[in-house]
Image (cartoon, rainbow, N blue to C red; front, side, top):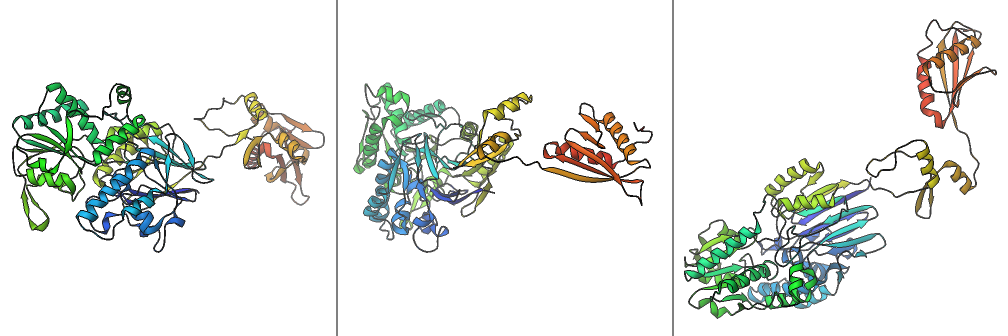
Length: 603
């Protein structure tokens, strides 16, 4: 039986380092190639030795697909393609292709130039890696080779994020990457058609969460920022350069305008200017409202939000600072946090998910003393708030996507094991489909029943209708009798007469014969007459004839009686029928094996 195999090398019962291998119809595809924010050792990148122990990956992979530009989905790409070695195609959307190298270079600078790490990819490797990229357009079917095709769907989440359908013949898999089922201030909601894949591989970051209304969260966020600024405190909002950052900037910009606020809002420079440039460039990927407003003004040109200089962190008085990265694991956000952590007037608002091992995760869990590098201890006195402005689907959103796509099987990645377990049970209960949640390095195998398309001749359909069968209905499969003709990669079901005519063949009659022994003290002709009488009484609505040549016929079935001189009471009945009457032939042989009822008169 054909099967599809799925093995996570990263993001199996874990968030971070997304990298999923799919084997389908003899093709091997890598979905995402991310790094883990919580590790600095060899656990940072996926374990590619799973694919092959020695040499390059090119001959083992047909293609690599990147869902969006977040580093936990693309951070290991140059390492995989340039250091381990892969020369095949890498597919991603146009915005991802534009933004991915900027984030990779930023990540490289922090890791190599600031932390001084060796054994890391270089700027040149990022450039060489990006030369292998083939850009994808939404809803465009791309032929990777003669058999493998892929198609991208809008995923919301961040600019350029896409879900991907992978198809080989009639087998298919959909990979969601990260997606959001509710539109936000700058992006639309994810969408996919009813493609009924064999497996839907979905992220499950917020598997157990059903988020409250967005408006309440936004009000809460503005209230907390406002209160802190009013009492002279400083607000730090760690964000990743793209996505939530733009969302919260639009929110604060409109609030500052409405309330006529004077406290400065800063954004850590470099990345974000480029980010906003790409939002302007790829305006068609944003939501309807922004596209409409774009004619009068660009929503990404902010009046109240200025570029941040690191010397501003020591300025007195209130301010709001957006700084990267979002989990406080390095960079500017961590530098500012160290300066402001000791003052209870200040506040830090964590707007999204933090991976285990990061400082963001530690302070959200209430840690008040942090051990920093050089064995220094940092006391956390500022207020810590968590407000999910996450652009991931919650439990409700995941269920909504399943209803949209109608998959035959479900597989969860990019989530914590306990939360996945909860969602898995919910999915299996509600949709009665299998749901899998493999750990890293664990393979899930799904047996597929590929449907083979067959053309049916009009004559055969008309004949079926004439027999009074129900009309064809895709939801209720039914049996059709005909002759299957295979010709030049196509299959046709036609009537036997048409097949004989087309192929220039003569018809052969195939008959089945069966012997039944019967104890009956009468002569052979009398026994045959008694059989005729018995069948007349049992089989109503069938044509039954007693022929002069000493046989009984029921439809196409012929019955003869013979006996030997030594045992005249043991009769041997010979039954013969054509394959069309096989069911009736089997029924008659079973009936006659039971013998004839007493009191039957011969005619």
